[in-house]
Image (cartoon, rainbow, N blue to C red; front, top):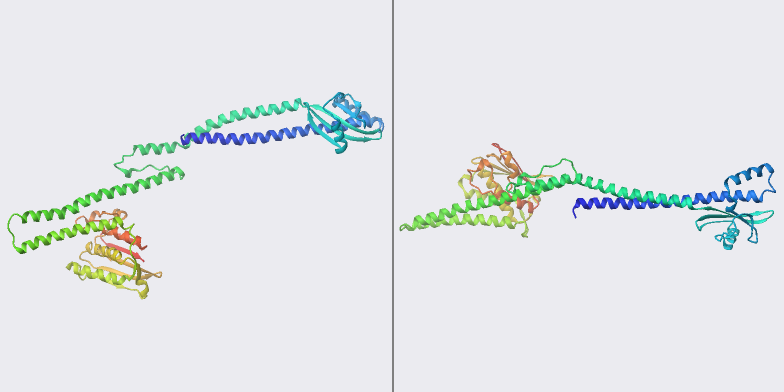
Length: 449
C-alpha cells in the first residue's frame, strides 16, 4: 500500500474513531439528561396530584382552585393512581396497570420515592403521608416522544458519520496528494539524474521541513558518492600514470641494454636505475596499502617526544637532497617538556609530519620553511609555515582528498597521497589539523596535540 493511501485511510479511521466516541458520549449525555428531565417533570406532576387529591380539605378554596386548574391543564387522571395502605387505588383512573407491582409500592414506602421505565412508559412514585392516611402517589408518562427524539438523534449521528467519513476521506486524499507532491517531485528529479554526473543533485524546496531535510541529506550522500567516484577515477589515472612511468623506464633501459654487450659499470648503472624505479613502485604501493587499512589497523602505541621526531625528519630531509640543506628552521618555544611527550604510533606520526615538511620544502623552493613549536592553552601547537606557491582558494576544500593535486602545481613532482595520508594519521591520533594558504604568498599548517 502506498504511503499516500495509508495516510488517507489512517486519517479517515482516526476521524471515524474520534467521531464515534464523541457521538456516543453525546448520545449517552442526551439520553440520560432527557430521561432525567422526564422524571423531574413526573416528580412535579406527582406532587401536584397529591396536593389536588389529598389537600382539598386542608387548603383554602382559592388556593385549591389554582391547584385544580393547574392539574386539569397538565395532568390526565388516567395517568394517575393514588394507593392507600391496603394497596388499593383510592384516587385516579390508572387501573389495571400491571407495570406497577406491590414490590414497587413497598419500595416507595421504604425509600420515599421510586422511578423506573417499563412497558414503554416512565413511572414516578412518591410516599405522601396525610391526615387521611399514608398514600403512595404514582404517575406515568408515555416514553414514545422521548424514544422518538433519541432515535432521531441516533439517525442524525449516523448520517453525519457517513457524510463525515466520506468528506474526510476525500479531503485526506486531496491533502495527501498536496503533501506528497514534493516527494513525487523528488522522485521525478532522481529518475532524471544523469548518473554520469552525480554532482547535479536535487533542487531544495527551502521550506525547512522534513522533505527539505531529506533532499539535503540526499544531496550530501550524492556529493560523497561523487567524491568517491572521483577518487576512484583519480586512482585509476594515478596508478596508470605513476606505475607506467617507472615500468616504462625499466623496460626501456632493459631493451636498450640488451642490444649489445655492456661494461660492468653500465650493468651497475642500469641495475641501479631499475632498482630506483622498483623502489618507487614499492613506495607507492606501500602508501596505498597503508591508506586503505589505516582506519582498521589497531596500531601499537608508545610514548615518545615530538621534538625528537622532528629532528629525525630534518636529518632525513637534509641528507635526502642538497636543495633541502639550510632551508629548515625549527623554533622551539616550549618550556614545559611534558607537552613534547605524546602517546601514539611513532612510525605513523613521523610519516605524517615527514609528508607535511617535505611538501613545504617541495612547493617553496628555494625559500626557508619555519617549524614552530609553542604552547597554546596547555597544549602543544606545531606550525609549519612556508613562503611557496600557496594553494588556490578553489582547491582548498579538496586539498585533503586522495590523489587530488592543485591546478598550480601540476609541473611539480607528486602523487596526491601525502597530505591525505597525513590527515588520516592525525585523525586517528585525535590531532587537530588546520591548513591556511594564500596563493602566491605561502601556506601555514597548524597542528594542535
